[in-house]
Image 1 (tube, protein in one colour):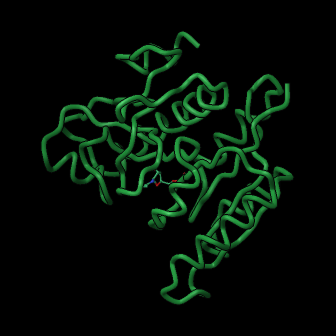
Image 2: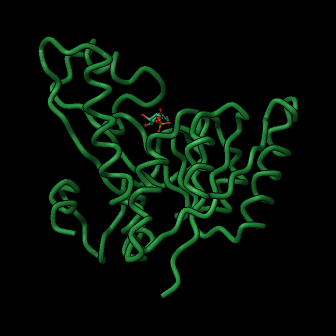
Image 3: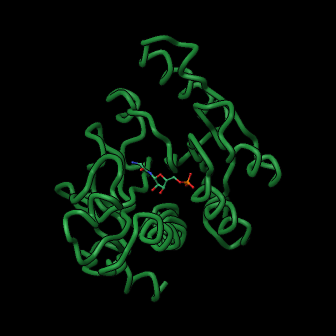
Length: 217
Ligand code: GAR
C-alpha cells in the first residue's frame, strides 16, 4: 500500500519533526515524510531534514510584508507540487489564514505543549507551574482557524513536581511530544480518525485515554 505523503512545517529546531522522521523510517509506518517546509531560512530543523535526505523548502514570510494570504498561497503551491496528503505543524510559529486551514480540514495536525484547552499560546510550562497545575502535558489536534483549538486526537500527561522548573518540565513534556506525535499521525494516516461534532472518534468510537491507546497500538 502506498504511504501517505506528509509535509512537516517548522520554524525552529525541529525535534518533533525528527521524531516523525524516525518513526517513518519503518517501512510499515503508514506515512512518509516527503517534505519539510520552514518559514525561517535559519531553522535548525532544516539541517536535520537534509541530513536525512528529505526535500526541504523555505517560504520566508518576511519577503511578503503583511500579505498573509500570499504567504499561505506560496505554501499551498509548494505542498501541491510535492503532492502532500497530510500537513504536520511542528513548532511552526505562525498563524495560518482561514482559507489555508480550510484547504487542509482534518488533514492538518498540530502539536501544542499543554493539555488543551488549558494553556493555549506561549510559555505554557511557566504558566502551568505558576497556576499550580498538578498535571501538564502535550496535545496533538486537528488545526482549525482559531489558534490552539480544534479536535483533540491524542494527549499525553506528566505530573508537575513541587520543585519543577520551567526547563525540567519542558524536557519531560517534550519527551511525551516525541511519543504522541508519531502515534497520532499513524492513526490519521491509517484513516482511523473521524471528526463528529468537533470531537475525534478513533475507529468510530470515543477514546477516553489516548495514553492507553498508545500502548495498545
Ligand atoms: C514544541 O514544544 C511544540 O509543542 C511547540 O514548540 C516546540 C517546538 O519544538 N509548539 C507550540 O508552542 C505551538 N503553539 P521542536 O521544534 O523541537 O519540535
